[in-house]
Image (cartoon, rainbow, N blue to C red):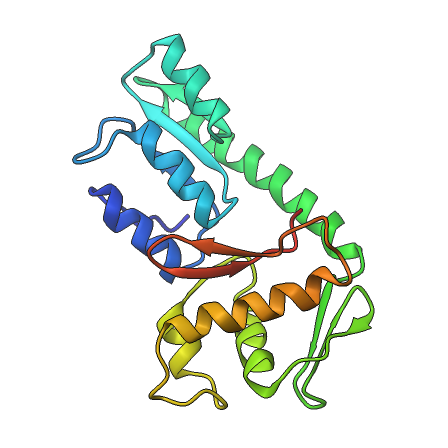
Length: 201
């Protein structure tokens, strides 16, 4: 197992937007922000499994942590071997669920050669700029992409355009997706960062 540590919760949240991790071990006593407040911020970015590892063994903390999206709670002290076992169990369960999901038909299909994106089997009528933006979101599916990246890495958006233009383009893409499925929101805003496209509804 390769472990990357972050003593500051804000640094940890930033790392989640830059790298792909399999699991988070979260302490509750953190500088600047309580661990229980960090959980919903993690859930705004990713559905990654979370194990709370804390010296706080109050049942209230455990209930709140699990309600906010944690997958397990381990009060300290504990045998490290138990932690490893729980990590393996959660990852096995998570990857098994992902494998079953992968067997389903993909909601979004990106064809870069034909410059076409299909949603639920239907081709989306996209402008060149909309294709660029949605294509980047698809390439980072279930991960956040900053407005700046969407703006400056698009081949069909003027470099002099404002960041707000991205919000306008996202709105138009959402409207086109909604014509096929109006019941779910697939492109979600990530406060202070940008947007995330998810197929987990």
